[in-house]
Image (cartoon, rainbow, N blue to C red; front, side, top):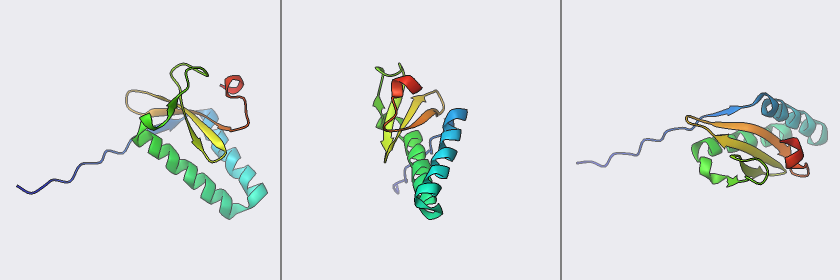
Length: 105
């Protein structure tokens, strides 16, 4: 019997309104500081990371000390905060690493 290839199920993620706005702001701020090309590279990498988290939600670290039930994962100078749900993960916030997470969550 021939070996079957494993079936890969792509995880799903949803972004909160706030996180969606933050992605736009990250792009706009990067354009101003580093140009369009770098902004596209950075936000593409960010979106790839969001998909990776959806595929492997346990990749992030628990951060119950900040908000119970949340997990976090660093991407360059930003921290992605998310929570696992039944059929997806919810991207709650994407904060610059110098921001006080307890205050902004």
